[in-house]
Amino acid sequence: MTSRKLSILAVIAVLAILAGLWLAGRQVSPPSIESAALYPELKQELAAITAVRIVKAGGTPALDLQRGESGWTVAERNNYPADEAKLRKLITSITEAKVLEEKTSNPASYAALGVEDISDAAAGGVQIELDGPKQPIKLIVGKQAQGTQSQYVRRAGEPKSWLINKNIDTSASADQWLRKEVIDVSADRVQSAEVTVEKNKPYSAVKKTRADEDFTVEGLPKGKQLSSPSAADNFATALAGLTLSDVKAASEVTDPPSARATIRTFDGLVTEASGWTKDDKHYVALKTSYDAALADKFKVATADTEKKDANSEGAPPADPPASRNVAEESTKANAQLNGWVYEIPAYKYEAIFKPMDELIKK
Image 1 (spheres, one colour):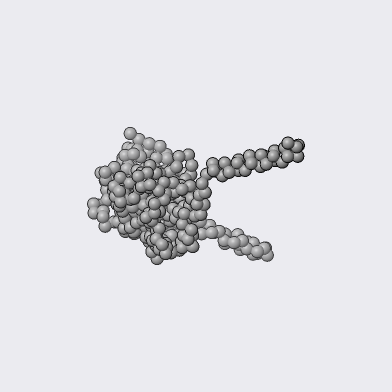
Image 2 (cartoon, one colour; image 1 turned 45 degrees about the vertical axis):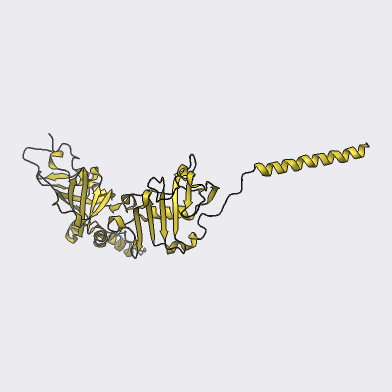
């Protein structure tokens, strides 16, 4: 055999080896996955969503969020306002979910991923439903994948299950979806507090000027003194960043309150608080008003004098400092507070309704 023929055969052999390797590579490569969005049309239909529901094992309704003219509300809590940021995150996670991998289509294997039909009393996942889109969304959300920001899901009524690139919030307790903010009165604003706690003597904690560092207490029992100069300073932060743990309609609370407090600010906001304790839980109802006389009494100097001085020298006047419209603040607060009793953390309750015997030296 000539050297030319040998060279040709060698080239053919190399080509055959390369072709075999290419084919082998195709055979061991992972199967193609569905890289499209889990719900491709949903992004264009966000404005159409009118309700979000979560259904638990056995088809038990757990959560019903409804969108009305004034925003989203929680049906299980007498339509109290919902946490719209949390809700937005949930909807966004479903909208942006991409398929990473196709999983089982065998119903016998669904339980391993937590994506069995929600009608099953032993179902491991929950079903999230969105009303409003042309094709209503019903997504069974199962277990999270280990070590990744991903989750197993199955579109209800379809055999295939999927691994997606998102973790979806499946918290199904209504209190977890409530708007948490109740009221926020910063510490520098609080001027006084009048407190009456069941079986304790009423008293007042007062700052006579904005410059006072501590509250003085009026109504101390004869011969008693505060445990420390700052013993009553809890009132400064009693209403600062107050958030709820849960909420009830006021009509559900029929017992008379066991504690009352009226907290006033230097700028005239008056907050009346009524308190209850039951089964180791702490509840408060709030009502606000505006006291113009109080605000006028502690009114701070404005920039008017400085502006007059500047004008007399021919210089342009400075802009006036920003001021808080407390009357409007009170009106807006009451619109949220009226008709509700809030479950709040114990430490906040104790700051609002601190009994006298916890202030005085033993």
